[in-house]
Amino acid sequence: MFLRPLRSLNREGRTGCDKDAKKSLHATSSSGSQKQWTRYGLPSVSDLIFIILLLSLSVGSLAPRLLGDAGTGWHIRNGELILSTHTITRMDPFSSTMQGKPWYAWEWLYDAAIAMVHGWYGLNGVVFASACVIAITFSLMFILVRARGGSLAATTLLSLLAIAASSIHLLARPHIFSWLLTVVWFHLLDSSETTPSYGRKLLWLPVIMLLWVNVHGGFVIGFILLGIYALINLASFRGSKNLAERGLAGKRLRRIILVGIASALASLINPYGFQLHVHIYRYLSNRFLMNQINEFQAPNFHGIAQQCFVLLVLIAVVAFAWKERRPRPVELLVALFAIAAGFYASRNLPTSSILLTLIVAPFLSGRSEERSDAEPQPERKAGRIQAFASRMQSLDQQLRGHVWPLILMLLGTWVCITGGRLGSHQLMSASFSEKQFPVGAVEAIQRRNIPGPIFLPDSWGGYVIYRLYPSVKVVDDDRHDLYGEQFFKNYLTITRVEPDWEQLLNQVNANWVLMPKNSPLAGALSEKTGWAVEYHDATATLFHKQ
Image (cartoon, rainbow, N blue to C red; front, side, top):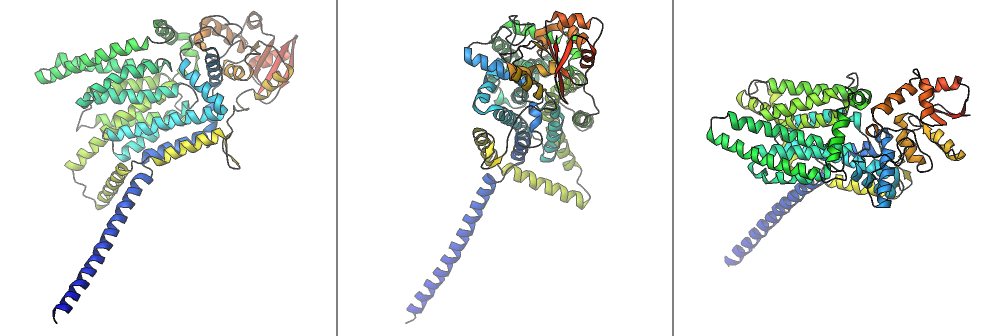
């Protein structure tokens, strides 16, 4: 009689326990699935950097900046020539004054790629592809800095400063690939010094160089960095009295020399061989051209982008001056190179800012950790801030899904396929600005079938090539290495209306002149007999020689 109630009680007890166990299991599984969703569904800080940059550069307020350089136009047209003829351009096809003369189209691989994108999606595709490269560059920089030990706060701050400093050169041109390759090159090179397992990954450097030398002349940066690391290891090998340290430095030096030789050989695999290196050296060592071309001149530090670079430099100086730990000699030398390059020419600001961020953020973070271990914070408020930063850093490390950047890239590609539209909304309509370029004048030239050649500002040449080639030739454009020193001396004499300007203008055999409305040459031709105004608007005036 007592067995039945006992059995019943046991059943009820087991049933209750089973229910509690199921509830606990359900709660655990729900919590696990929620954590999985959080890990793969929420964007990390690097994802947010990618998303914000891609949106602002493709459909946002920064999108017009990408087509702010007329050189994009001749890059597209040269790429189309390469794709249609299946040969790399070696003679100038665009200029009436340089036609048939040797031309080093050293960015031919970028030209072919961007022409292919343009053929598929037009200027929308050019802008979106360039925005993707820029967004990938800075999000990858952020990820690698965090992997090198940078704290979330320091890495975010310095990354934002680097992005702001780079805004001076946010253009749809091949140099943006140099930014990306600089990030990868430096990471592989520096990691081989601190992590033995990265030694074999240096074998990727010649492969990267093979791509770099055919995309942009910035491949020179790769050799400068190799030289810095070789020099530091040589000094360590010769100066160290510790046999183990000396042996390690010798091993690193031999590895860098071998990789450097392989990279140098890889750099010769280009359409022009070693002549490309000679040409680039002559171009960059020409003092006249370097002093006249805006992007090679020293930065004007009244701009926000330049001030952000100065702030990056100040942070680096303060971090290195902190007494508790000295920077590695190679860190100090690379930072000095980045600072010197940034102060030398404004076009170097993006690369210099990237290198400084890669070096300073991990160094600064390591220093802050040392201080927090050695000197406990007495204030409760500082402890709370530090604890909050620690929790945010831990959360960010767990977010590895990268779902949203992928979705955004797919969505952006679809928008380009549909002509910039998403449903009934026109999201993208990329074009060259009529306030910056002679859009109306070029349309007038097309309507009237004006044959050219046309003398115009070098900063407009690429746009006119994009719109009018092959029916119209330009007298000049911004390929300064092609035209050379003497040509641009004459060009400046003409545009500045200096003595003998009229004689030099006659020498280029241009019966058409297209100049900014209020330029000195436009004013002189307006008063000169024998020249008539054929078209004018708020941006440009087109003159014809009678």
